[in-house]
Length: 162
Image 1 (tube, one colour):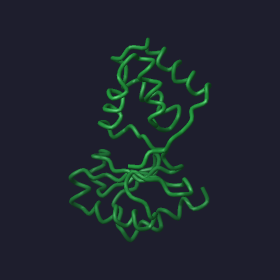
Image 2 (cartoon, rainbow, N blue to C red):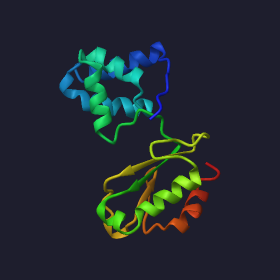
Image 3 (cartoon, one colour):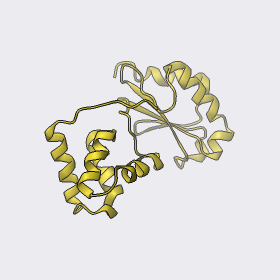
């Protein structure tokens, strides 16, 4: 995974400090701090993690360990239309891998990447709880069920003008 170097503005550093303070700078609240920070910034680059570590007085390695352990957290910016494909058992058995291959081909990106225009990012999930509709993919909050590789182009067309 490539790392993007960013320069945080003082206002961003202050916002992260404010979020940490909302949780009493308690290291036991690390996951809550990370959730709220990612909701605010969209992702958790190393520079943001360093500020959180400093504010909570914990090693950066601990913050990084949590960010990389939980698939919800992202160290890279997500696209305007984040695509998540379910790789749970039902979806996998019903062809999710072929759907994923078609998405990678159409978007010309790998899992974890964002298209150069920032329109789409691609990730995998374990289960979205719609097993009866397998294989399932989500674009933002919208769920698509019984997706086939042949249907990917039409789904992506819905987002052409966004």
